[in-house]
Structure formats: C-alpha cells, structure tokens
Image (cartoon, rainbow, N blue to C red; front, side):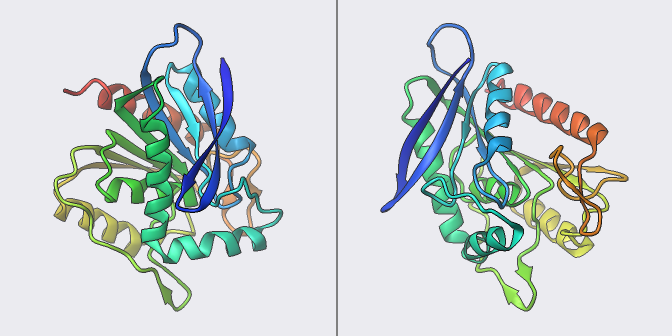
Length: 246
C-alpha cells in the first residue's frame, strides 16, 4: 500500500487530504471518500482510507474543516462542527471540493466514486449525495440525521433532482443523537425524491459504534464490535453492487 498527503482547495481554504492506494499496477480504480467525524481528519479516518485500499479501492480521507485542523476535546469539536451543521450549503461545498480532488486524480476511475462518513461525517456523506454530485454510492455510519440542535434549525436545501446514485444508512436503534422523528423525516424525504436508498438499523447499538475508542456510556457513544463488523460488511456489499451497475 502507498499513502500520500495531498492539498486541495475549497475557495480560499486549503484542505489536507490523505490518499491510500492499493497494491498492484498504477491504473484507475474506484475511489471511496472518507468523511471524518466531528474531531476532524484523524487516525480513525485515515485508517478507514487504508482499509478501503486493502479492499482494492483508492481511499481518500477528506479534510472537511480545512488546514488539517483537529479538535482536542468535545467542546472544540462542537465549535468546529456547528457552522457546517447549520450551513448545509457550505458543508456540501466542502464535500464537493473533495469530490473534485479525487475526480481529477489519474489513478481514480471517475465513473466509480463513492463516499462514506462517520457521525458528522455521515451527515457530510449524505449531503454530498443530496447535492446531486455524480457519485455512484454514499454510505453513512451512525450519521447525524437531524436538522436542528437546541432551538436552532439548519439551513437545508431540497434533494437534487434525478440522482442516479444509491444511499445506504447504517444506524444504531438506540442512538441518542437521532430521534424517531429524524428517522421518519429522512426516510420520507428520500422516498419523495424517488432516490435509491436503504437503511440498516442495528439493535442494542448506540452512537459511534464503529469507533473502538468510543466508551462514553453516559452520552451513548460506545463501540460495538459485532455491529461494526456487520456494518462494514454491509458497506462492502453495497459498493460491490454499486460499482458494478451499468
């Protein structure tokens, strides 16, 4: 495996992406963008890019915040995440910039682009899908699915028309970050937009179930090894199917 750090831009903001390339000949391959959780592009996001490379894809860990910024604690993470949570146009622009970066990479098959994301990154992956950017598949893990925090509502936009790609949402039934109303709303929105979507809901599972370092029982952020294994396998099956469609 070969890895590479690559700068790219969204407007005047510099972002530091992280590529992981699979072993084998230097030829165009499908790519999967990794959207990080609320702490920024960290070791977890980069490791997921490397795991994707082991599956034969080009993995690209995006840098949504810019400048490679990482939070030191949950309070900092919240401050960095909230402006993008509330301004969905800006969040989409940041994700589209990551798409444009991989799209122009000669080692990427630009007709086979996918995205995954975790927590806040799951929301970012869904927003890239909603934007109508020509990706083939988006998969979210324990995504934030709501549009409000406290008394404040995010500025959202309708789902783009004529989306050809597919969406897979992997969700913990007991995730305290997502209400039943959030689940029903996004399901209705996706159905009304006539897009190809599916949602897997895992019992006995809370938020952050993919992250081995998550052990915050008080706030419902806990790693679940069995759900993590099942969800990662579901993602693999999803992209195997998605990237082989005509």
